[in-house]
Image 1 (tube, rainbow, N blue to C red):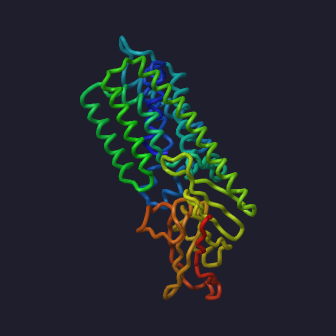
Image 2: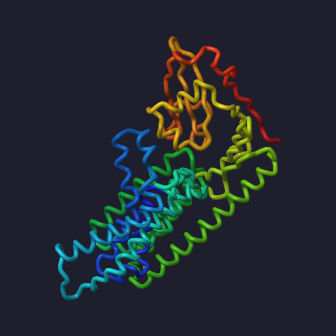
Amino acid sequence: MDPVAHTLFGAALAETGLKRTTRYATVTLLIAANLPDIDVIAHFAGTDTSLYFRRGWSHGILALILLPLVLSALVGLWHRWGERQTAGTLPFRPGMIVALSYLGVLSHLFLDWLNTYGIRLLMPFDGRWFYGDTLFIIDPWVWLLMGVGVVLAWSKGAGAQLGWALLAALASVLILTSELPPAAVKALWLTGVAVIVVIRWQRPSPAFIQTLTRAGLATLVLYIGAVYGMARIAESAIAERFPQATQVQANPMPGQPQAHRTIVAEDEHYHIIQADGSTETVPRPEPSAIVRKALEDESIRGFATWTRHPYWEVEETGDGWLVRFYDLRYVEPGQRRSEGPDIGFASVEISKDPIREDSKPARGEKRQQQSDE
């Protein structure tokens, strides 16, 4: 999930009453809920390097064990050598800090597992990817369900209210200007924001805010369970239409838990089924010598490690070949980098020497369009 969702989830956990269990409870949950994303520093080395390292070591079983202990130790050091216990504050409970650290880190791994990007849960012992295929990487309903209690609890002063207003405006611009969610999703989002504003205007009591936060968390759990079930039902229904399929994977649409863009993988073809039922079939051949050499190129090692449904096009140049790779989870076949986001696309140039000319794929990358009647 996105950083906003992780932060809101950690804050919401605190507002359920956990913030009163020990001193530093809220800050511990906030940090722990974002801590596995320490691997974001790989972005500074480039997009492909980020793909190679992201959601690996810091999202694996070893990190799940060690990161909470490291955070707990740092909080303990801050308590000992930084701030001191003063009258009127909560007591410092080291055991509770450890428990909250584990809860926050586990929540991060769970939320990241829910989308199609995946996590390498067994790192560093095994590099396999695990996918929940349940939520779009940015889900407005997660924001609303987790944000309602947090906004109400953390918007007492004028400065805080202004900050939340700006955040709500930015989130609304992101959702309203995107072509992905339909008008109904956008209208429901605005309604949710308006409801939070109305509740805040009525100055709810701390007890009501805590109850509302718990209700939001419970609703989120039910929502995730329902959406997970919808995705698996959709995959089962499509698998019946394609008995030769080796894999069927539902990609959730943003804000639409009942709609999916589904990838069907067969031995020799992919079928891409859009949410409206239209279907496109593309070849899925064994990689040629050119493609294998391209996949071994250091410039796309991250993409080669991360890609789940690879599709490629080979174009002959003056002294070699240009190989374009697409991951069909995020990019349509033939979609160029200028036509969409960078994620899901990579390209590499391969010299003809020492690859023989006759190793070039015979197929012309033509795609067969189909429409479900």
